[in-house]
Amino acid sequence: MVAKAEQLQDGATFIELKNGIKYYGAQDGIASEQDVTHDVIQKLDKLQKLEHSRTILGVLCTQYVKAEYEKCYKLQKGDIVVDAGAHIGTFTIKAAKAVGDKGRVIAIEPSENNLEFLSRNIEANGLQNVTIVPKGVWGTKGTLKLSISCRRTTGHSFYTSEQFGTEDTEEYQEVEVDTIDNIVRQSGVGPVNFLKMDIEGAEVEAIKGMDETMSGDVKLAMEISHIVAGHGTYQVVIPWLKNKGFQVHRDGRMVYARKNN
Image 1 (cartoon, rainbow, N blue to C red):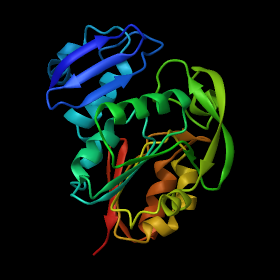
Image 2 (cartoon, rainbow, N blue to C red):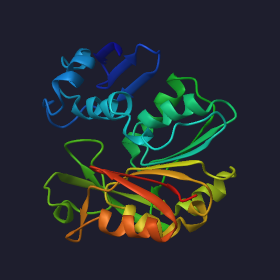
Image 3 (cartoon, rainbow, N blue to C red):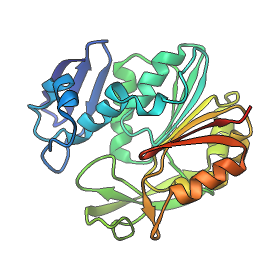
Image 4 (cartoon, rainbow, N blue to C red):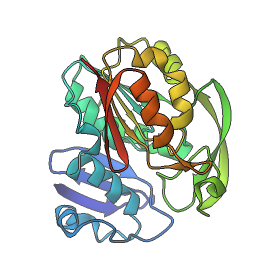
């Protein structure tokens, strides 16, 4: 699966897959740990020599080994996709390749560092069908402080480390936030076919601003494994989806939903 893996002089990790897709990503604040199965390690063996690549290893496993976001729906040519919590673009790029020139991917990401790599990866793969939205997703439009994880670039959140029960927050960034409905409307695209959401607990707020988007025939894949204010986010999200007329399937940390026929 991995054709090339190296750490560059500028400190970035570079991965090229055998299918030609290229990814650049930041190194982690901690050394890699073998927290994936032996089967996965074998498939991504070229990454094991990179000491601080736990995050990029994890997101590549999510996309290309487990295909976690695609278990309820196979992307079609011409689809409109929203990637909320785009990170460095691992799913964005995979989705953009799948939907083709007539499709569109709206990639939403608030972190400055992640946005740099997201733009770099889109350019490296020659994609013209991606719109980057440098914002966070929330229930209202405004600004919020984004808690930056010093350990991994997928751990940034609008909730403090104390709320998450961790102690890896070292700094904050003030970022713009907006609703899914506003972002989709301003992007000028048609009805959304697929919404992927992985926004570190903010899903409980995001659902307050996506009624319009969810009124169509949209399919959804959302991570709901977070604890916010002492409660699992799934306890809020799943009842909300069912109330909107969605058929819901939970699989571990993920929930998948599509409209009841």
